[in-house]
Length: 192
Length: 192
DNA sequence: ACCTCTATCTTGACAGTGTCAGGATGAAGC
DNA sequence: GCTTCATCCTGACACTGTCAAGATAGAGGT
Image 1 (cartoon, chains in turn brown, blue, red, yellow):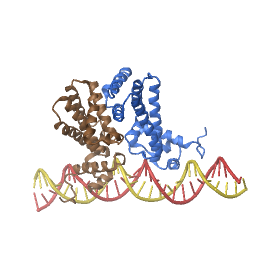
Image 2 (image 1 turned 120 degrees about the vertical axis):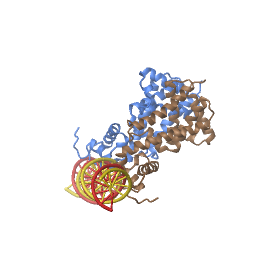
Image 3 (image 1 turned 60 degrees about the vertical axis):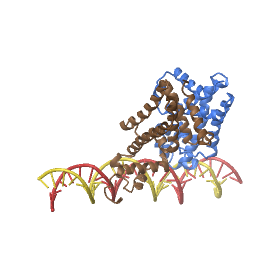
Image 4 (image 1 turned 180 degrees about the vertical axis):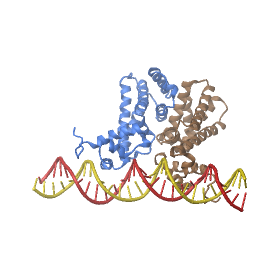
């Protein structure tokens, strides 16, 4: 609990936490590496040793974001019917949940050039998220094109809602909003 | 044709053109006001007089982006069947066309905090784009929820394609890609 | 015990950025 | 010709990311 040691102990994790806080407060376009260091209580060049540069930090943050992205979908799936169709819809609702709960992380992952998307760890995290969706589409009898269609619908809903551009949907109470989202998702893949 | 006059003549338009070129080359997150001024051949503080600050320039650029966004949709609609359903699908294809032709502008408009979206001109331009879509959904018998569903599908396809994340769709030849997009769009609103 | 080695973090510097204050320029109106 | 004013420039400031060089402390060997 001593914050004033020369060696921090777990500065890497502390910097990631500070970076996420800065990201959600200031947004990706006002993100500052020095602000992150200041928030973590270290010098402005301390992050360099753990992440190389600002891109490295944001890449690591994007990896963590993808993991939480999948975890948010799993939360929805856990409380949904075990049928493939219900699981797929639940994943879509989790997709939207993540975008609304962590809009800055969502934008970092899907609408930013700052993370290095050729980084192996980030590639793997992104591929895992895609594979999860593709598996579920396969389970309902769809192929690559159906995966693209479902993904686009979920992504469009999530992105527009997170940006505050779907006021008619956002104004609905949670249950009817979810059912509207579910209906849109259901239409995006073929009937059984 | 004299580029070295003290008074530029139409610096505002020249700065907008330079800003769009910089935006599409460097991306929104590496956008630099000084680079724009340098490209236009004026001093680093010249843009301030016409746009106030960097946000003002990007706001004006977003307004122009919304206009071109609508124009791109109109191009598709002009060569499509005049039936309401075909016109709506054409608008969706134009939506995707714009995202692929001007990805940086698309991101500026839909995934950036830098423009001032409370600016009257920008609000009006954005509302016009929304109204165009809503009108077409109304013409096929849909309401607010259907508008949201169609919008989300078109937006998701456009955003993911522009980000290069739908390789299966992007790999298709143009005609079959368009028909796949059209099929996804058709499913997003009720049958006649 | 001491001594090195190494990872970790700090300090200081540099070029580049947005923004502001003040000054220079030149076109238009009287 | 003189004034006026929009237009554009120069210079300064604080802030940013990145690099080089130094300070610190924990670990491991002798």
